[in-house]
Image (cartoon, rainbow, N blue to C red; front, side, top):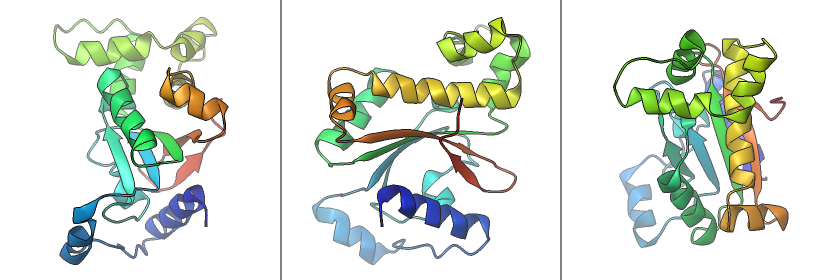
Length: 195
């Protein structure tokens, strides 16, 4: 079974209300003491309703999880993903946005003109600077669903072009980078089809 299939099957179990909660024991944790070998990297939102391990019904050591509000990425996140690819041999990277994302909503509601002087402003500005979001604004197609999809598409494009490690590995077909959207109402994750 491929890494993507493992995620898809796990999400089916989760969304149907029949998760098996694999490898969530202290015994499993002790088995991992000597090292980790996750089969996928999941970049997702830090929203408490979006824990990748639960959404994909995976256990300890299965997913290398990167979480930030609005699944925005900078140097620290890139370094973490590069580590997973270079040192943990992860072949699959999933950028997973989600419906009802508060960070994306802040962008949509303010059309990028968030006027609070706090650190949340940096997240809204990041989303507002995404080419994919700007294309929506220019085309007068800004909506929550479109903005979430554009945010995921931006993350995928960003990683595919992140030099030197990710771009090179992606172009040589050593890694797969795909997008996904998680519906917090149904629990279902839809892969790719993000345009």
